[in-house]
Length: 88
Image 1 (cartoon, one colour):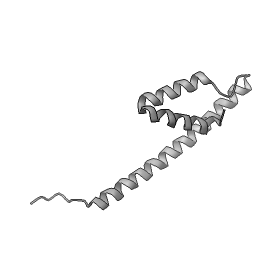
Image 2 (image 1 turned 60 degrees about the vertical axis):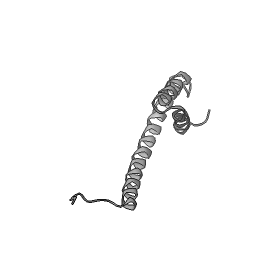
Image 3 (image 1 turned 120 degrees about the horizontal axis):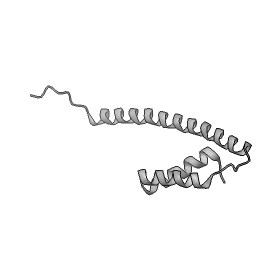
Image 4 (image 1 turned 180 degrees about the horizontal axis):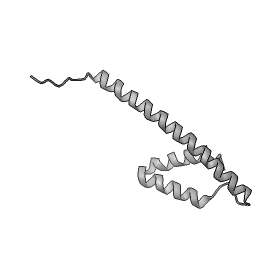
């Protein structure tokens, strides 16, 4: 007889969803932090005579997400960039 406790599928799902919710909270917090840092970069670039958007930097970011996450990573990065810099 096994002494290891077994967990019901319902409890496993509930536990996993709780973890997903906690991860989502962390992800949202990180995105908000990224947005704030991006604002500093944009304001500093504009104040020094530059453009609001640096397309070569954005291409680097898109490539990084694509490499790490595949094609959906590109869409995720585009959404993230739009959140951080606004529509261009």
